[in-house]
Length: 477
Image 1 (tube, rainbow, N blue to C red):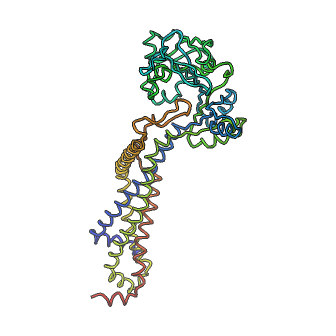
Image 2: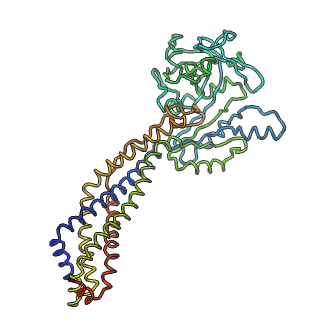
Image 3: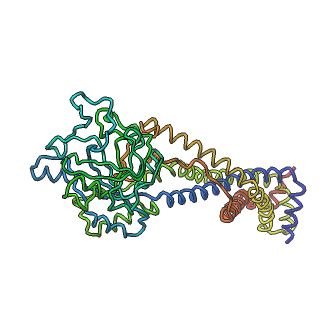
């Protein structure tokens, strides 16, 4: 077709305007491709983080419903927790998407064969070193040791976030479920000259006749300093925390707690399955009037928050650049077409069809578009990486400032120990991402580029093509 040859001749004759169009179109394509690549990278990073971190669902007594029922029955409201049967807790472990689980129960005890670490601020009347607290709202009982019964210490928040770690021996695992073993604090071990392989004896805080001998299988170190109450009560001192299998902790609480736990935490293989797990759990025989299923994907949300903001921003960039690019390119083409009225008038006067003239203009801009897309495909990955990580860095900084302003900064977010599953204080946000241009991104860019070229050409062409050749020629000087 002659109009295709004329398009190439025209581009060669008007190199300056062709170069201007190429520069503008290349900038548009680079930013559009960067936005598309950043969106793809953010989506992949979010999916990877979601799969790696998953989320957790905690089964525990619903204290709000319990207290509401007590009030309804006219009873005095008490802060008591209904234990969960281990058999009931195990029913949920077989549900889909449960990657791991932990059974937890806590108990208070007194040191028998060793000395607990005394808190510096304990009152003089507590000469025995034992803290006193009220249990069940009825009686005062003393304790200087806190026992945290677990199925696996490796799944606890303190160990997953690195604030606690095993320095000697091993952790407690599922194979220790029925064993009388313990993992004790390094400071407590040093003070009492205790080592892995040795043993300690503790007694129940509620009934000192109930004693348990535990074999030390591991020693851990913690960076936790506890809360303000730890200086007044020994059992709140992190150095006095001992980890045991949940069965050993239950035994210290009395026969009524045999085969029972305080809570169970179920870890999902993907955070998106949390809701479906809860729905499936409610269909089992678990009493939802007594127990509550608490979901927790805070770690995942904290990690992907900034990157999702970047993805949203890049999506808006694609829209804005595409629209603005079409307008700018349309104005350039319009100016070019207006300057070529005489050329069009002559061609139409000798019988050239209008659609061929439009085809010539469209061919010129499409050739520019193809070259611009090629330039963008070569440079887009570098620009997208720089732009994406710069935006992500700003979002991470903004998120950190927001946390500190709201009083949750410095890694001091409230912790639920193992009881409430994972928490976000130990999670690092995704601060970098690898942005690569994929074939799919290039195909989408190609579609957007062609659309911009067609719109930028057709809209200004319509007004000129409506003119009669005689009118165009008589207006020329």
